[in-house]
Image (cartoon, rainbow, N blue to C red; front, top):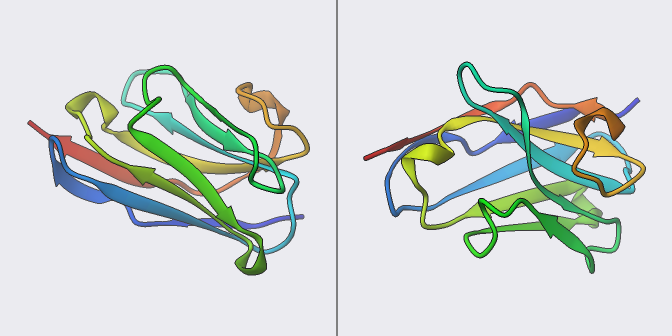
Length: 119
């Protein structure tokens, strides 16, 4: 069992930046970030493997978001730059065996943190 806790959400103006953190209670090979806006399905944002040398991004955030991890602290980060109003959502951290975009392949989930981008 791995417990995940997200930090760092908040309100930011369009064009601004936020950094999300996700602290895990144990090791997980792959870590991912997903988001869910009101009335929409949960969507993949980014994923990273254990060593951190392989990452995968949704097209909508490529070039603006960066996922990274610090295994000594069991923590994964999501640096979000050039934020847009359409990035507004609850952001969830997830842990699993494989670095995939399919939410069903992740075993553990955090409670989520709200990110709101104002125009």
